[in-house]
Image (cartoon, rainbow, N blue to C red):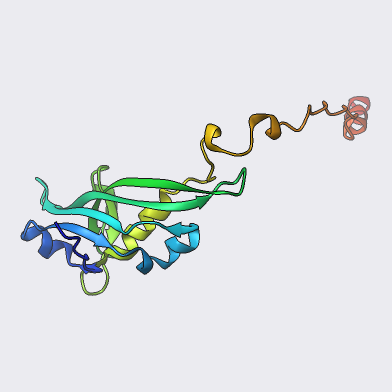
Length: 175
């Protein structure tokens, strides 16, 4: 099956009424913010996306994203590959909607002025958030060994007298 390029904008309500399913790709070079956060995007983003209406009548969409990126290890400064396999579940909301009534299973996503969602930006945000806070190889794969990470023992801090002890003594003397 050929990889079909997904649209960048989607009307979730119309798509849910049609029970639309999208399976395709989002081109990695279109994700500028993600490309700034990684060394390189190695694959296009494979997306499986379904629009539905739940028993409460809420429109929601869910699916998975998969891609590979190259990150720089913060221990050895060498690049390494990271496979990202991310699941998501959203419900569209308008500005001013009460999001407290939304079930916890859904993340709210705001519609634009045309009632659409920019899924390219939304999925790019999800991929950025799924990156590790500190990118590192697994220890056996890293060029830096555990012995090189040790910098010696930390000596205990010398206790100094409390500078407010004098005030405490003055207070006792006044009583």
